[in-house]
Image (cartoon, rainbow, N blue to C red; front, side, top):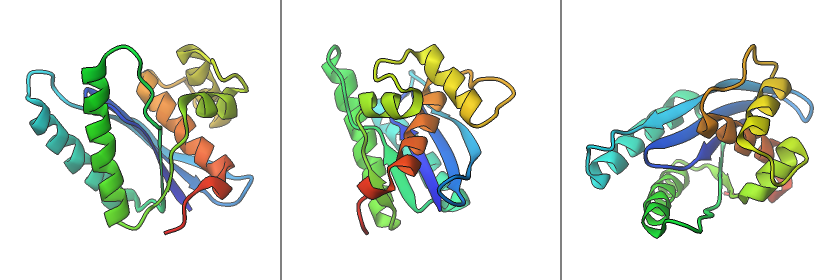
Length: 162
């Protein structure tokens, strides 16, 4: 089973593909970020993210989308834009028949590190340790996406049915 983990955003959108061979064997197939340029208007950025997201779906053929639930307290405009990105991804995931899990940030951190208030550095280090990477991911959003995919692999019972 392949799981696509996503840390939604519109400047940087983290993604990771985990291949779960069985309950004990998880392989990190790829991870990275979808980047958009701040000079572009939001609708152009949203289209760019959608196109890249569809390419990920076609190339890796995941069966599950694990996408972090929204949590924001400071900038409402940013939160609304991230909500648009999430909505587009949920639509495309549904359209492509993916099952869905939407963990909260604290759930992801607790599952991944044992600490619901883990720092970005701790999340990166845990990604390196769990998946035996030579170095930790450079970009926070990609480390978070790895953790979000990992959460789904560890919580299969929470995943919605098609």
